[in-house]
Image (tube, rainbow, N blue to C red):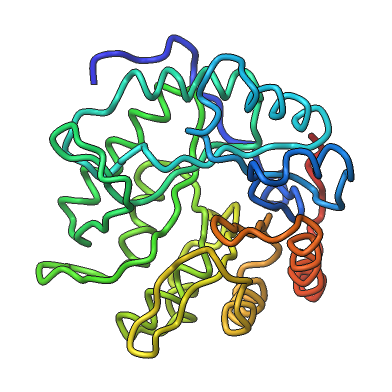
Length: 298
């Protein structure tokens, strides 16, 4: 990578002196189908997460809605095209557009996935898994460092759901993710549904996975639905969160404490009120965990 941002890196919103992570409450993924309802109804949602790539344009209808919603709610940016694990060079045009969007909307934070999506300049538009090796850790941690320097801020990296494993793996996914976070200084976006999906597909203990992670690095949680086919499970984001994922979420909070949480829904999208009602279940579960010492106000 030959180009760096001229601004100094500023960390994501810092924990206070007591070590409490920033707390933004309970959010939803912002989807086109709900733009008008959000503005007309002002739902009881603490914040919204946007798909970064959907708004990396100057002006137009999406940005009109985004600006109006940003005036009422905090936003987080969540990307699907960083391709942090690829061997292709980092896409500087993409990073410039991502950085401009961040300057425009001042998000809580920026996140993307621990995966690769592009190879040879071709974007697969899928979240492809990485081998859990020391070589991959060094490669990904270095690239995260470059991205953070370019953007001038720390980012969050999310565990993805996986359906294959690598014969040359040197560790499990939790150790892999933990070491990348330690070396790069990034935070973790923990997708609890993805943990459940992958644990079913690969036969590991989901609770042991959570226990192996550095709790202080976990700054956001994703919840979503999946499709269960018995012998395997697919992360589809087209169902309500299933009971087994809610149970894992509750156990996760018992172990790591309160974490800013949101629900993703990307297909078969119901009326906004249904998702707000589902989000209330996350609030009820969260209320059983210790309350954060200090809220971060946006």
